Image: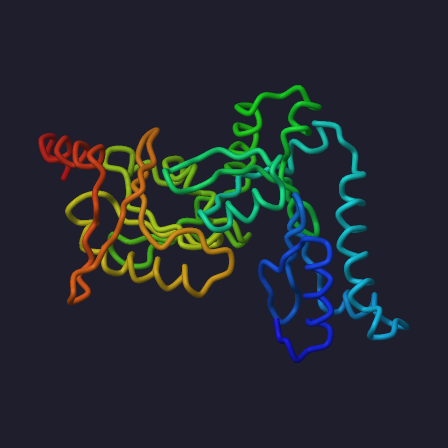
Length: 286
């Protein structure tokens, strides 16, 4: 946010006052993390709230808007049948996971892929509301049903055309909804041909997923995949991880990445992945 902009400065003071944080911003809107919410506010709507207010009262007015918006969402129909079609999986990296758990310790969350956190959230017009353990208890649902519901919703709203070939042996997803990283969880459904070998996958930010097959041909795209992961993790909103993951049937493994002095990337392969590679070589699929 531009510290020289009076509205941005008022927003910053308001968020600090209510324990919220700005998560992402553009020329049109800002996304605020507050408790179990990610709330999108258009700059025009914020300015409308401040009409008639003196600059000294701006921070208080914005703080009230954030709290009232979240409270109104909490007052929505609590019935499971209303929430069920809205729930999606949301993937977090270490930093965003820690920030979410600090804002909302009751958020339902599961460790995933060694360095990721898997959460579930209701997607509504105006933002996200993360599902909390008290909500889950009130519904009488277990965590397995919640996760299955989120995955089913994601599958239903993902077209096969989401998978776009960038180069030979290198693909990316383009779901046009800001949550391509979540499709890490259903990659085997989208690309059944990967069932045999699995894939090297980059999920550097919430709206980015790119992959190459885990075989000899796919390794030719390693530099491009790593470059994309590092660039998007640095530059895109909602960063997740600058490394790579192996995604195979019923398995997701984190792959550490280091570089030689000349910049050559080196993968720190977990033993499970070495075993998979050896099996693929023996079977003639490498």
